[in-house]
Each structure stands twice: as C-alpha cells, then as structure tokens.
Image 1 (cartoon, rainbow, N blue to C red):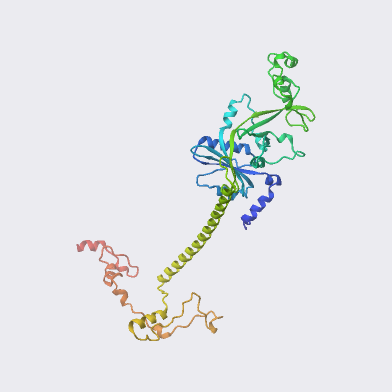
Image 2: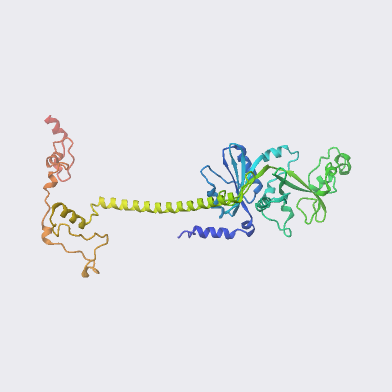
Amino acid sequence: MGGKKKVHPKTRTAAFKASEPSEIVEAPHSFVIHRGLACPYITDLTLDFRRIMEPFTASNLREKRMNRIKDFVSLSSFFHVSHMGIFNKASTQLSFKVIRLPRGPSLTFKVHQFTLARDVISLSKKQMIDNDHFKHAPLVIMNNFSGDGKHLKLMATTFQNMFPSINLAQVNIGTIRRCVLFSYNPETKLVEMRHYSVQVVPVGLKRAVQKIVKGTVPNLGKCNEVVDFVTKDGYASESEAEDDEQSHVVLAQTLKSKGNLEDNKSSIKLHEIGPRLTMQLIKIEEGLLTGEVLYHDHVVKTEDEKETLRKLVEKKRKQKEQRKKQQAENRARNLKLKKDEKWAAKRAAEGRTDSDPEDDAEYYKEEVGEEPDEELFKMEAKSSRKRPSLGGGMKYKNKRAKLDTKDTKEKPDRKDKYDRKDKFDRKDKKEKFDPKNRRAKFDPKNKRAKFDHKKSRKSK
C-alpha cells in the first residue's frame, strides 16, 4: 500500500494562507521584543505590552541574544506582521522603538517612567480582569494630538495603525472589553499610555437589585424577607452618588451581561489593569532604524546640513551595495579555486600531470641544444571516462571476446609467491601438519595422523 502523497512546502504555505479569514489577514499584527542589557523588569514590561497587543501578536515569542532585528523582519511577511515594538535597555536610559514593517518609518521614544501590570492591579481596590477580555482587540482612544507639527500626526497615525480599525455600522459592542488611552501633553511633550478594562453597568438600580439581576447570591442572614434586603437603607448603592452622568449611554444592542438591555441607560466604568508608560518622542527615521532623520527633538539642522547628510547616506548605501557585489565575486572566485585545487589533487593522486608537451620540447631544446625526437614528447590522447565504443559485431551481441589459447596455456610463475618473507614458508607448512607436534590440527584426509597422547608420554 502506498503512503500519503507529499505536499510541497510552498503549496502547503499557500493553502494555509488561503484558509485564514480576511479579517485576520488584514488586521495589523505585531512583534514585541527587548534588546540591550539584561533586566527582569524590562522582560516583564515586554510581556505586559504583548498583553495589550493581543490577540494579534506573538504572545509566546522566544528570542535569543543571537537573534538580530533582520531575523524578525524576514519572518514578518509570512505572519502578516505590520509593526514591531522594541524595548532597548542602555546603561543610562530605556528607549521604546516602534517600527512600521517592512520599509519604515521608525519612531524612537525615551521612556521616563513605567509601571508593571502586577503593580497596578495590586493597588486597585476592585480588580476587574478576565482572560476573556483579551480575546478581542482593544479600543484606541487618542487625546490631544491635534497640535501643529507633522511629527504629531505621524505619531498619532502610528499608534492608531498598531490596532485594527472598527466599523461602527457592524461592530459588536459586546466585543469591546478593553481600551488603550494615548494622551499627549504639549507643554511637557510627554505621551501617557494607560490600559483599562471596560465594564457596563445598568443605571437606576440599587446595589441590592444589581446583585439579584447579575445572578449573584446575596447574604440574607439578617433579613426575614427579600423585601427587607431590597428596601434596607444600608444596601443602597454607594456608587450612585459618585456616578457621573457623562458616563451614561443608551445601548444600541443588548449585551450578554445581565441588566444591559437595548435602548436602556447603562453606565460605563473603567478599571485600570496596566501597564503604564510615560514616554517622549525623540527621533523619527525614514527607514528601518538606518534611514534619513525626519525629526529630532534635541538637534535642529539647517537645509544645507540635511542635504549633506542625505549625500552621506546615499554614499554609504552605494558603498554597501559595492561591498555586497565584491563579496559575491570573491565568494564565486574562492569556490572556483577550491574546485580547481580539488581537481588538481585528484589528478595528482591518479598519477596524471597537466604539463604541456610543447613546453617540455622547448625546455629540452634550450637545455640540450638539440631537437628532441618526435616520439619523446608525443601528444597523448586525453583519457576519457566514457566506455570505449565497441565494434559493429559486438554492439548487439552479448558475447565475450575470445582469449588466445597460447596465453591460457602459460601458467604464471609462482616462485615469487614463496620467495616473499611475508607469506608462510613451506617448512612452516610441514611443521604445522606434523602429527608429533602437540598443537597439530586434525587433517580430515589423513585420519591416521591423529595425535596420540599415550605415545607422546612414552616417548618422554
């Protein structure tokens, strides 16, 4: 029985990509890694930022010191990766870089402060976090990015494009369980990033009624009836007085959470789940961390200096291309030399030389002073590995060539065989089969030559 037919890797990859839905393929995916000095807090911050970017990110991405950024860039097209976040720890500061793959631009931020997610959750009184919240992408909220300057527009566009867009006509409100806030301060030029969990609570219900509606079992130990539990003043909602009317919305859809019905008022509450980031935009580059600097916060250059830098970058690019071309030529030449050396060694092992007969004849003429004989440096036909062609009569008949009877009658001389010292001698051969010898072996032809122990004892 034949086994399964093997599928070519390219065919299998194309089939895998075709099986993915368009929503997943078109959504922006991301890689989040860390570089530089080793620090456990930076590793935890990287994992927390991956948590923000879920589900369209490599949550369990394993990176090693030997990996380079170009290794991740080479894999980006297969996994539909559009952005890469890099936390780089230096001896003096921590930087965060956002790269648009595969051709840039690259934004470099200086991280002034950060707080891990575990620290934010431990400080909150009411922890509202669930793994179901990370099954859908968060909602992006941009605040105060409407100032002058192209760098602000580019920064806001980069943050928005890191997350999938939302179609208001087809969006399901129940899938919006998280939100990410980016707030810009024009005075300090700092960007504040916060991560919240979204909770929708029905409005106009007391705390006791909310418990009953949500399905939680209340403690009725101090109450005779359910009415006492509902009407008791101590169970009145404490959050109603603090609740802001701006957070009240009229729901366009019925949510899975109990009490949130369509066309009814509900209140939206946010619970911070971390991490926190406070960063400042330092530099914007055109390519993947190596192109022309489009914006710099500390250094301001004139047009002449910018033109000089452009020429320098173009010169470096041409030199790099020339080096690559030269390396390819050197590699090809080295491979050819190795091949020639290997072939020359093989010819030398077979006893063949590449000397030219014409050069040997001229050398003989110069040294001796006479013309060499014609047969001395005669051109020999080059040996071929091909089998020599047979005659017309031997092409289609499977016959062996007849040997000369005279040659077959002549027997080879075997004197050399016994003259060699390496082979056994005839005397040794006789001693080997001597029946008187104690170590003689049994000869099946000569049965009488069997060794007799009694006679050997009498002889002694």
